[in-house]
Image 1 (cartoon, rainbow, N blue to C red):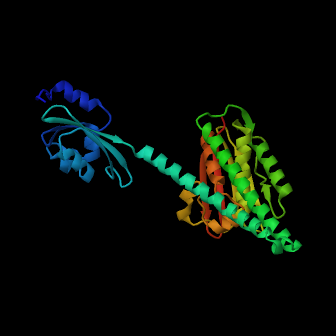
Image 2 (tube, rainbow, N blue to C red):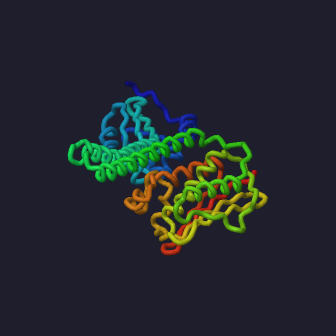
Image 3 (cartoon, one colour):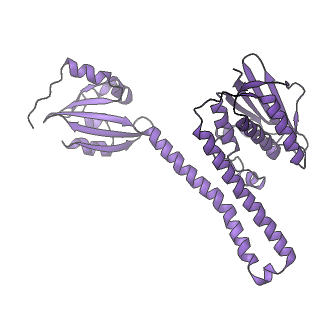
Length: 335
């Protein structure tokens, strides 16, 4: 291939205007790097040997030759980053190097893999219990005893309902994510939705439930999805009852001013250590996994809350103090 490429003003302007990192290499030296490349690799790369400028074994191996090629390299901009490096010869002397950031796609893929693995684990645990007790009941000696049969069937029913709740939450999360970019435009009174949720939960709650505080307003309209807001309120109250103290009800407050509708749900439970707070809305994240499962949680309640808040353009804040309790505040735009 004859040498035909020339690094002129037009080429420099074109390379500089492209947003992704681009590098032009003459021989083994970096002759031109646009702003994105210098931001990523540093200003010092100009005039440097390209194999030193991009210090990665796979990149060095590809750049040592003269052929076109593409490799995926990690840790270029951060330890968890993933980049695709492409090399295209322009003639016998010049090469164009393109760097494409694949970190977002990699994060999505990793999140999807983790989600599938976690969901499979959460479903496998009650399923294994159900199969184990059913196999025991099929044995003549255990299945013939009324007391044993009744006890085992109760466990099977509890584990089956746990699976059903998990599947329901997974489907709910999927439906919410499908419309996460579409802000609702119906008018919903959050105060009425909250009062209804409190009444329904207290009607089915055997112990201490929830109570609306005196400062709550009677009307708090906002643009919203009534079904999703009801689910949000129920998830927060049930979470507070599940992890709150046994002697005091969960307090629920709805406030409103000219620009904002605020929902506050507080419990008097054991509280949460500060290091756990940033991860509470992650799917299947539990501060105490065994306690949460024993209490009937699926690990998806706050993830669902986070997605509903995002769809309604709200702000979610969770504060907690060990030994005092936990408070969840959500602020929605009133208009």
